[in-house]
Length: 207
Image (cartoon, rainbow, N blue to C red; front, side):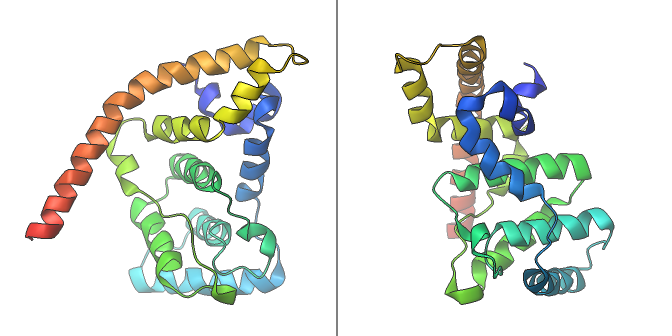
């Protein structure tokens, strides 16, 4: 399968019917610019790096700043706290893609998520997305995330297919066919996920 299908950054032109996905994804990778939020976010990242002695290189710093902002916990800017029900899957995709491209340590990712999930946030906000690290136990976790995005936008796909004023194009049909292909691969992964979760539950109860 072409990697382009799994690359949200290419969906803006190839899959305009998924414009909401692209518009949600795009701000996630932007640099932290708001001065007030930046100071708040940098303090959080500094504490994480100091506490756990992660390598404070440019990639790790920028990733931490962006992820802390994207989780919406410590921001003064409300636009990064719009986490609708479809947001988490798109955020997970951004995390996975950045992890692969920038060689981000999975333990750093978990630490940032845990920090936002366990602390009282700005304006008593509550972090809504929790990172499922079991994604990284499989060869192609992005397939699971991609399928989750497809499921959450099924209504958009269905509307386009049944819209009498919409001319079904090759890209839409290609997208659907590739999603079916991914689904078949995900069936095996879902079985593995359930097995992993059962093992963890047994360990938690018995150990």
